[in-house]
Amino acid sequence: MQTGLLWYDPDPKKAAQAKIDEAAERYHQRCGVAPNTCHVNPAQLTAHPRLRVVADRRVRPFTFWVGVEDEAALAQCG
Image (cartoon, rainbow, N blue to C red; front, side, top):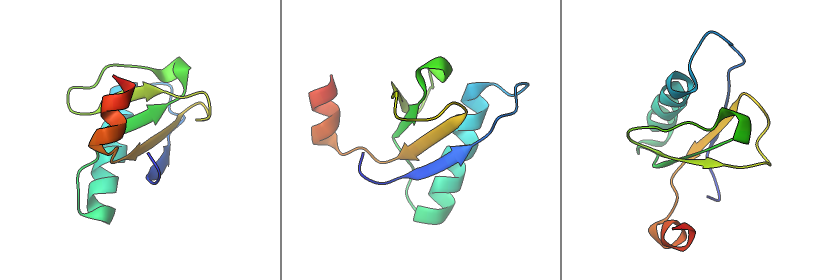
């Protein structure tokens, strides 16, 4: 993923999936297209029904990087 939206939410009472939903909604509002991928810190790795969630050590804790991963890159990742 080359570009995306960084979403920071340190609320310990909110589930990671809810935080990803909020980030994805904001990305869709700003960019006009729904994201298909979210990079998260490995400590926040979770399943999501609509987005591919990727553990990424470069992403800080409680930060969610949502955006559109191109199909070629998705195929390479498996």
